[in-house]
Amino acid sequence: MGPSSAMAHLYRGEIHRMKLWRERLDRTTNWAVVVIAALLTWAFSSPDNPHYILLIGMATLGVFLFVEARRYRGYEIWRSRVRKLQENVWAYGLDPSAGLVDDDWRERLSADYRTPTLKISAEEAVAHRLRRIYLPLFTVLLAAWLVRITAFSDASLPAAAAVGMIPGVVVAGAVTAVTVAATAVAVRPRTWHAKGELRTEDLRDGP
Image (tube, rainbow, N blue to C red):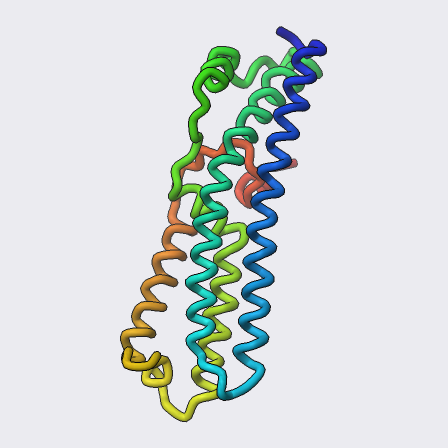
């Protein structure tokens, strides 16, 4: 089953599916950026605007993160098939002397077509999207929130972080805990199961 007409149509179909799921990822990211920009503009438009709107923005960003991580797991189904075809059909067809990347790729691809399965865990998907998009967005919101409660409030930290009846120390502690947890998920050493993604480590190994 070489790069025949049927295989070319199959590859084209998988590329199309991967492209659609890639667009869904981009759509979520675009909405997250637009919402965050709107919240930042409103939060700093007047000293009377409450600072907790930025905390609501962090929570909203968390919702977008988990939605996008779920979509990324779906996207990885189609992307992994495309990579398997590229590695074992097109790369081999262009240079047979390099051999096959996976001798059992036909059996693996056939099994995946019979029973599609998720290729990566939810935690890996969250970590990937944090590294690529959401950790920088969280950092911007966190910095804006700190500026907002220090520059527009007469109270000192952590009292300035109070939200209604909730003491500032509780709010500041919750924000710190969420930030530490997100950073730990994003940067902890791991074995990535999403193969072939362009990550910083992979780019450093290039020619």
